Amino acid sequence: MAPSHPDLTSFKALSFDCYGTLIDWETGMLNALHPLVSQLPPAHPLKTDPPTAAMQRLDDIASEHQVRTPALPYNELLVMSLSDLAHELGIPLPDSISEPFGNSVGTWRAFPDTVAGLQKLAKHYKLIILSNVDNASIAATVDKQLSPARFDAVYTAQDIGNYKPAHTNFEYLFGHAKKDLGIDWQQGELLHVARSLSADHVPAKELGLGSVWISRDGEKKGGEGVGGGLDKYKDITAFEWRFDTIGQFADEVERQFAAKTS
Image (cartoon, rainbow, N blue to C red; front, top):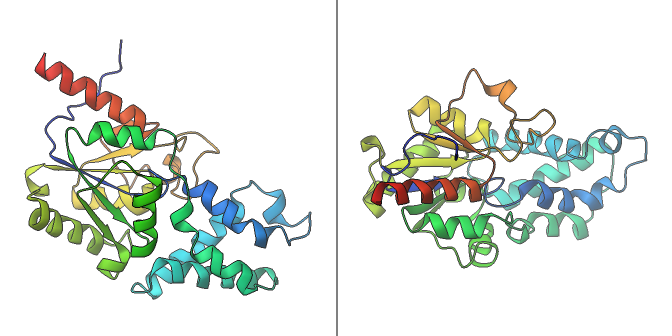
């Protein structure tokens, strides 16, 4: 028998974090970081620690910049963060590494379950992206990596002038979803879907927005990734649903809508 999940059929729209939820952020970031990390000596901690260690350190630096320079587009902020990491490691950073790195986000691939899952979900909801990246990167992702799935609205940190987990980003989502799409989150019409506990589910709980955790192994020890593990955030976050993947979430949505109409 299929596991029991609370009702998902009452919502009219889904808002998604994109990178880490729909797009394989970690693989893309690790590949983009390789030209820098490959210069480290074999015994360096960022080579002997888990493979995600360099990525997590870069994300920590980027998060600091997001707070200090919230209006800086993500592709530029990424290059600045990489430069800081290279300086910290004592490695030269030629333009041949930094410029491709900043422009790599739009080339990162979708998870295998993402596109088919989005196409199923689009039959039942309006689909919205709320992302921390810049407009050029998200446009490339939507047009190339997520096609033929389509979104009814895309809102970015560059549009908002701020980065999640700031409440400003979610307030922008609420206002524009209502103005652009007629979706009223206060009437329970919007559900947020995300991988990152720190950037998405913590502010969702603070604001009273229902959410779905696409955990992608984040519930397992060692699978936490950049978005944080449940052990760290369990006391300050909440989500009403958890699925391993977008594909599993979409299958449960289909099951519930089918049961409701049968």
